[in-house]
Image (cartoon, rainbow, N blue to C red):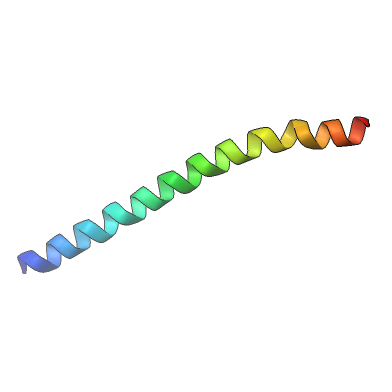
Length: 43
C-alpha cells in the first residue's frame, strides 16, 4: 500500500515537473520569435 502511494506521488511530481518545464520553455520560445517575425516582415 505504501509503495503504491509512493509511486503515485513520484509520477505526479514528474508530470508537474515536465509541465512547468514545458510552460517555461514555451514562454521563453514565444517571446524571441515575435520580434524576429516582425523584422522579417519589415525587411
